[in-house]
Length: 106
Image (cartoon, rainbow, N blue to C red):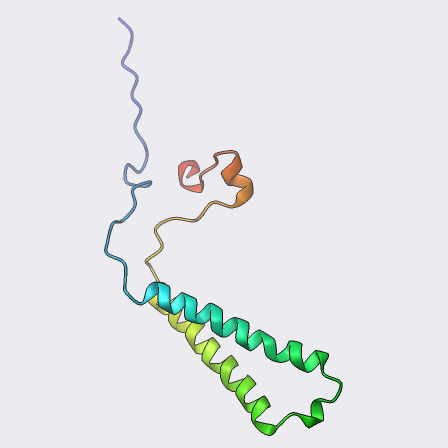
């Protein structure tokens, strides 16, 4: 009689995803941050391509700094609201192509 082969995982719940309802603010907040990042990135590009930056109005610089401040606050808010909500690490393209999962190796 052959011994029975036992195949137990160290953590049986490691690969299970939490099916808690998603927050309603998640996607709109991420889209707003992406749009604000693109707008904020336009300021240095326009200033770099301009021949005479002294001709810019004073509100141009204040708007640039204000948008950067709002973007930084928004990034901190996203990090604070998402704390502990991520259940597993997303695979990188290199590890996804070979089927490697960081959760399976631990």
